[in-house]
Image: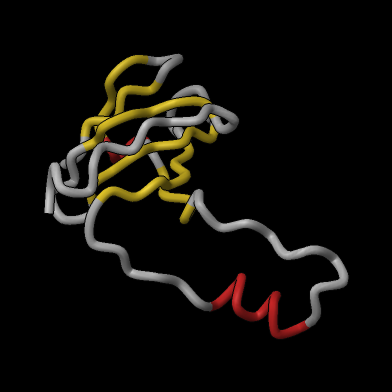
Length: 95
């Protein structure tokens, strides 16, 4: 079980949140073409290590948060607002 420290509601169990996807993806430009949009929608990396993700606190403040989570240990290094720049720990810190 994860404990996510919502900046508005405090630490809460992950059952109150919904995973909303990879926060590192950038939406293609409107004129980028079908292949670019197909890649954006359907193709995902499966990273092992620190990853920046979107989580929504659906049973609390309902805000969408940015979370830095280690995909192997589920350790959470940082939680912030959607427009925050979060520090990602060194890649060698956890593997």
